[in-house]
Image (cartoon, rainbow, N blue to C red; front, side):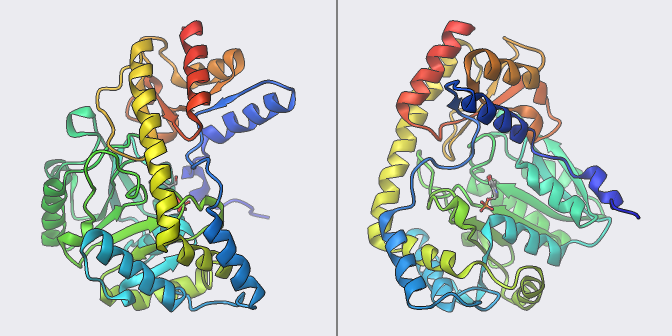
Length: 384
Ligand SMILES: Cc1ncc(COP(=O)(O)O)c(C=O)c1O
């Protein structure tokens, strides 16, 4: 029996999951672990969201929704863009998905033919490469540095574009660097991609978590690009598995068709959770949490620099610090393992984010309390 398709060779696991499993094992043995590896907010689901979901379930609203999502949720998402970004959006362009992950899969599914290439920054969000491989496309990972805020420039996109290129993916703020792409640069990328007849996909999943200035949604640049977002990060609903995308109107029927086949719809209780997450009383709570993240960043960034990690750029958003650790090691994966075993500090090695000097980098996530971050820093200081 043939049990493994060839494409599985190109699909990489998340290395950090191995570290997480080891961290959990050490915890089960009684060790105290400071978790700075996990890319999810540590806060509980906001009370208004829980109340709304209980009410929805009690009223029996647990059946399939349309594949594009509850109409009332699509409208609420469009309303959120109007209030927060000043962008008037036809709710028909909003598609609700099982997380941003579902949105990325849908978008790539409708735009990418086998053998076509997708441009993306390295380091970048690892699953993007694997989605492309899953669809038998090719990834062209472009090494980026602090000089460009770890983001692609229009010049790099033009330089790496060829006749096999179908799309460019950017994430702003980025995972793992937390840095933004300037709107002017993104506009130039959009204009170039439009001239080539390609597709621009902008992942705005960390948009609610921007601490310096306000990130502008790429929807202000035109209605011919795809914007990905989610209730996982700013809204804190990781495990509820609900996100969304905004698409050019003409593509929605294809997205609808693919969503019907791939997942029928996002989970209905989670769509009710998302609806409640967009209400003013929940947003007040979420904004307080954003402030807590900002305070954590403002503590952790100088603290890690003081110990000797090189973080050339102050990230404007998300909850990550991407640190050069070559002063301490030539192998960040081994180093992350040692930190976990020796001092109980869990961080993510650069290897998960691409091939651009991963051995010199670690990602620190400030998704734990200030007290725990201080504990982690003390341990690192003493050890290093
Ligand atoms: C840049 C980026 N995009 C997409 C996702 C997927 O998020 P979810 O499927 O939970 O919405 C993540 C998760 O960490 C991410 O960092």
